[in-house]
Image (cartoon, rainbow, N blue to C red; front, side, top):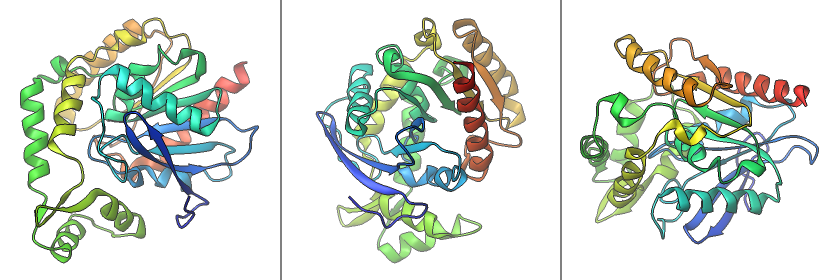
Length: 290
């Protein structure tokens, strides 16, 4: 266990049949609600670390974990099927010794939580979907093959001859470079085949996209717990696509609370304080309704 991260965050490792998983954890109190989140494809948990700073003094036990094959979690030993995801989420909750929690995630992490919500319904107080969990590949107008190729092409573009070259290239993409950016860089990249590349492998991406290709919000149809969806509003040319996805989501989950993130595209890093504020309000409202 490590505590060299800001905001009282510790690192914990969970051993599962799907591989070892790294958790970033801040325990406030046993009487406080638990919020457990997973990031998106290719993201290390540091990409959501700002949530810990945004949630100070809000009386929430917060956990962000790397899915297998991402960040500092081991390469997965199994696939990314719903059953595999169920094992991951259940193992995380069991490790934390948590009977009930609010679960969710960003991008792929939102889809992962949504896929497991029925299986874990008895342990879920609420589902938090951040820019994910509502659009299907059909609504996006893509196929498993085209989406996989686009992600892999992007992933392969991050290949550098040295750590120094990699650091300079990634820093060039960031308007402001912080210690959190450096932490994410250190967990997202690895030396492999005499080059500095992203830690996530082709096999992981292929399996994740195969699972996303089968996703439908119908998995939320029988879920009775409250659901919060925070979604992007940019680019404007995708407005109709988003509205179609939201309409289908409302059909299957009529009790969902939908909150647009102002002036936000798919990348939400700069908007995490707003996101955390909305999540905190959601949890507070759910607790007050009981």
